[in-house]
Length: 564
View 1 (cartoon, helix red, strand yellow):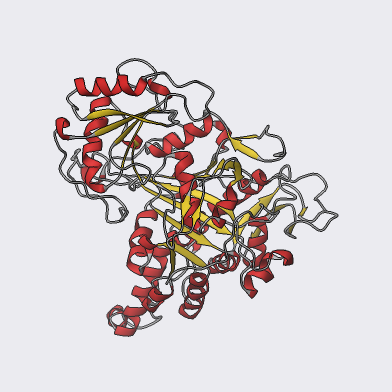
View 2 (cartoon, rainbow, N blue to C red):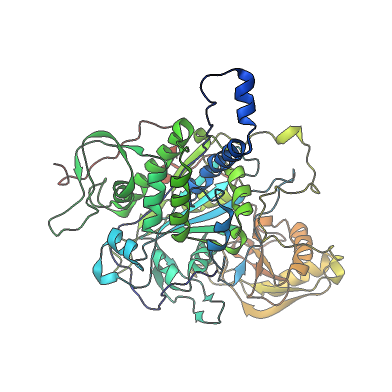
């Protein structure tokens, strides 16, 4: 079943409050019958009805870690007929396909999942919860965007939020029906990506910015958040003072809480996740920090006290949440969601790190209050995710069962279906390589080095790539990149990367090339090889505002004028 929504070009970002969701591990047991002998209780446990109910509840408990943290639906596994109700959309509408996450030397594959909160007001329930009558039926905005990275060894999880007010260059996105949304000529607010063909364009924008291969997405709307908050029976949150999110013009989420810790659920939880006016400085950044506090607290609550003893309630919640959720085609079956949940639940809350993309206020005319990725530090966070480095600075665990490096080892059962199957690599002399001069870099502040494509092509010929040739076309890349057009070319592109010392993350599948193409970036303006990159950071920069999943002392500062 395909997801459909009203989409349009040229819409401007409107002021909205936004949503998010999160969670972690859960477990549930059914108590034995009171009284009677132990043998009688064992016999009762063996009755088909009791055994079936207990098995279903155990499945539901285990899947909740994914369904909360990844904004999915409680109780997916409760009724298999819900399979046909799962709404799907295309994973990536952009031209650059990174081919999915790659296994490490132990055959372990990391996973990157983009969590999207849509502000769609496309039905009565979402209109009632979202307000903003003038936006009813309009194109939705991706007002929450969080990239969830699950480490290859399943020892840790990192979540990187992008503020809604981030300004980016949008890539070209093409809908399955053929409608083309051209690449933007200027900066566009990131939440408008959803209006350029759907969540697949939001994924494309993230990949273009971060160079991180995104394996899946999950998108949820207002009513889905309320359903999930009700599922766990409440989440503790903390404010440093009494807060009421409502200004003189009537703007705000309406959240009203007393100083200290409160347990929130339902619409109050939605208000918390949407609150901007009243937290910190009243900007989208404070709202992001509040969402992180909520998600880490929710993860701890599921560890402590998951209440899953009401099958009727679970079924109702599952159906309501599924109606509010959209996933990519790789997650279109119950068993796929179940396998993914089993991977996510392996990470304890203490190894979950919530961060915000490092940012700076834009200095561009007309963009007051908007932000852009912070040079250097945003890339440091992205690089850590690309290279599977834990953002909490604690490193990774040991490979399961004491495994030794084995490039041929099979990947995890939860590995993405998007990874290409690679044919055997050809000898260098049989690999055709086109070379483009991209030495000016993306910002265009440096002139391209003249004849650089010719010089590098000659270098490749000397290395045995006798079919290498310079192209008249140019490019703009900060780092040297190898792109290829088809899965059959992947192994040959890898041979070229090895010969030049180009990292695997810089080898990308793309619809923008017809064969293996080497883009000589700003890092290779001279010499016989790209410049060696500096060592990767080992912990997230302080500008990422990291919050650990075990931090129970987090409490939101309150904006002056919003207390009572």
